[in-house]
Figure 1 (tube, rainbow, N blue to C red):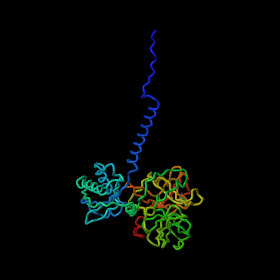
Figure 2: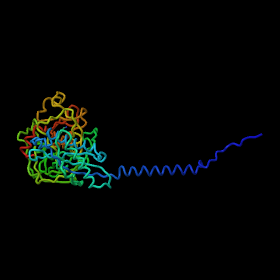
Figure 3: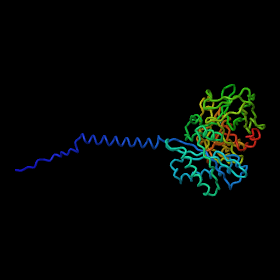
Figure 4: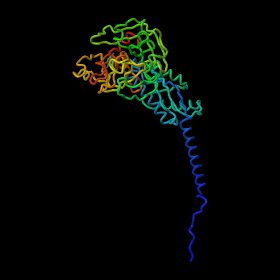
Length: 417
Ligand code: 4AZ
């Protein structure tokens, strides 16, 4: 009887060696393709900075444009920044353009000139000359778009990283990086990194940290008057810069100390002082000034602020040698003055800030240091000076700060800043 032989598939295409070869080759080719893609998409890229000026024809220069603290300055800078951004987003440079920042508004004739830094990310092999030409042609679009009459300058300068750093550190309140700060359950908050709070000063008595301070110009440090109650001789004091109080990156002697004439130790009213350094310092990435708010700026209850310092982590504890930061929220003076809080001891020249649990707070040794807030343009403003509080880190007992806006004119009278 005929029985068909079972058919054993003998196709040579399915030989295990061939299968293995095909799989390995495919994987290798895929890996190489992915590797090359990653290389060209990510590692072949470099950051480039350019500077250009923009003449604004239909805005008259006024005193309000003299300081980045005013609404006028903020508003005009934001409009210019968004016009430049829109122009690049709609151009063939959209994938290279990262961000622009107006570093200065200046007066020319009756009009305004804005200096802006522009950041791009493009291939290492790209031609910088053709890049300048491409930027130039995109910026030409600005002259006939939007409500601002802008004439872009023909001059586009490519900046080194050092040039860019100089531009940004001349302006007040710029942090080198925008790091997300986390809340932690210690009064000290979390450790700061080099350059995070470049205006933070350590005021040292015979070379030992005694109080915090806030750099407001290349010559002046803002602080609390109570720091000098027992020691008012400038010869005993130095100011240090950098995150470590024991290995500072700069130490400068103090020339003079000016405490507020009406500082009252019992009520702690007018707890503010300015310290003049012996010589002007040169700003860099890790040492530069914070912005001062306008006297009229309102500080909004509930808004986020950061306090920084080398103060103790517990009431009665030791100060620390590495700078710490804590995220808090502004507490309204009414709430702060409730019977469970400070029962009316918080005066109009003071400002409260804390967290409901109390866990993040300033403490002994933080005095004189900054409470800062970020504005819509990522510039940082000092709104408070660490002044007092009932112990540290207790619920309903937020930190109390000198309200900087109240003393804006006093600061100008004493320092010219
Ligand atoms: C102090 O004694 C001090 N919790 C500073 C700030 C606070 C309390 C005390 C705020 O220098």
